[in-house]
Image (cartoon, helix red, strand yellow):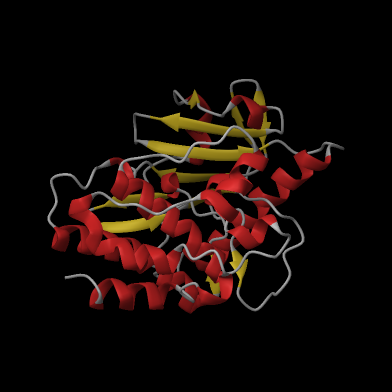
Length: 270
């Protein structure tokens, strides 16, 4: 990255934080020139429990990047961790994370792709997830927007909830209802299988071109636990069995992990 930490304050950073996150001290800035880059940081010091949870998430992500940014992982974007005071606009931060801005992977559509091309498209998604799994982690917050790409490679972003496979208990349930597996609504902890379910929803919405709709948390629980019916367009029925395995309501019957998903994607698609 070609940025000088001593001149960051003078650059034309644009505040892009969502309104709700602003209230919890989160700041997300975008820089077009030089760049494009994203700068993510967090204001400290608040008695609010939600603020503290958001702050802990940011620290958790920084720790993960510190541990693995030089390990040659394919799933991680090249990161720059700032560990000195930085002032942007009226706020001063003690540390920040800067990442390059790469395009969202799922912004495209499958309409013009052949079955084989779609198969390869989805296989590329599994590469960073399997790498993370082999490292002993799972992302724990898979969303459509957390996949970006550059020069044929898919990357993951937002590691605030990344979780070790060796830890069996997750104290805080922080998940997006759109992607929550049925067992999470019943108080069970996140797992590789709940990750497989989340990815299944991402695949389904991308393949079908339809977004699931719900007005409340209770509505989402009803969709995932009872109502959701998997139906793909006629021309994409080749992926029906794969998604049925990923989106099985019963955790014990769902595909076990991303290696199994890859095997099914490679062997069951004709």
